Length: 170
Image (cartoon, rainbow, N blue to C red; front, side):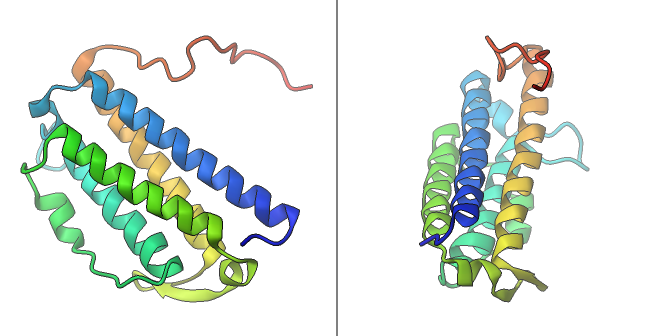
């Protein structure tokens, strides 16, 4: 469990950012038809379904396996080669479960484990680096999902609806 204010704040903000990305993915999925989830803009790009499978694999490998101590059974190539087989709801359910487990692991990670260096996907990184990677990686692919949804639907997703983003710092 987090011991000091810095650790508590780091964990709270990391979980908050992960949850915001999840909300944005859910909002995108509400607009998509089943077949659009697996549509690829071209062969060099991934479908939204592939991105969700990839996020599940990455979050599981980095947080649930490495920080959480569970076996690493990731099959990364399948995340990108899959062309169907999951409905929108199945993909969202899979993502929700992975994110729920990962945020619980992050919230329970001690300072000692946040500082400890371990090997993940061939990289020697600390627990802090793992959390930062997952937050950044999740956000990056959330942006891709949102962008692809906007292209498919020609619609603003309203992530900041009702907020004045032109306010100056005080």
